[in-house]
Length: 303
Image 1 (cartoon, rainbow, N blue to C red):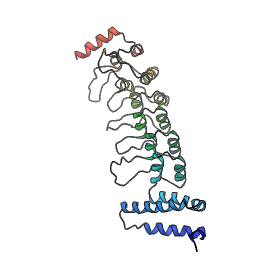
Image 2: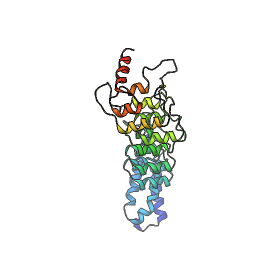
Image 3: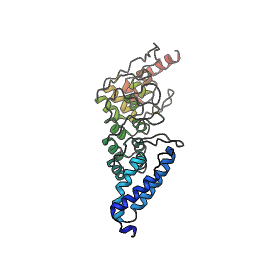
Image 4: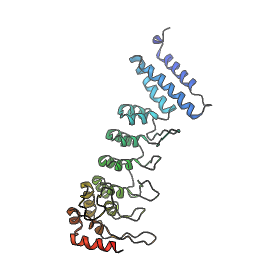
């Protein structure tokens, strides 16, 4: 009897026998993965024979990926922005936080959510978060989805992720062993929407990070704060200035001294740091005159 004339039940049994033969538990994990991949390719080709085969084997193909290939298709879907494929995989029971858990060169162990953030795919990110993706899982470099968003200054995406973090005061989004709260990092990278949202959630505006610094101090020491020496005329990033304004509106203390746990006292307060900048908007925000800039800088050099 020709293959196309076989009943659906028989066709499914043939495919299942082929897959079971490929899946030998006595093999190593890497070998199993390769064999399962070949089986997936075989099933995929079957779905392209005709409409009947596509309808018959498509769901089986997704279940095979979830059960035998550890939901690796979800990583592929995130990389290639295939939203419909992701939905089918999740409906088939895919692990929303799946990783490539075998050795591969330069494998950063990204989750689908991290890949979607790096691809700037807002709809894909929303789908994963709505399906329960963990926004606090980090990759092999210690970076969370929020970390990837802020490093690319994706304020809307960062805000979407923040809405799914339960405790913004205690979540650590830094790479180092030192505690780096979301408010400090968002302030330092100039993400005003995220800064305002975090403060509206009740996070302390002058809370300290693992370096005993405040969010306002981080904003003034940001890589976006272009002035490294006085009198060079550099201007300030607009979003970073807005973050400073939001922090000040919410009661940030511009005269707070940085005092570490071992008693070390920082040389400059946020206001004194602002005095080093020639941008008039910064001086107006911190109410620092140009004459005061000369005094502060000379005092700093004498320390």
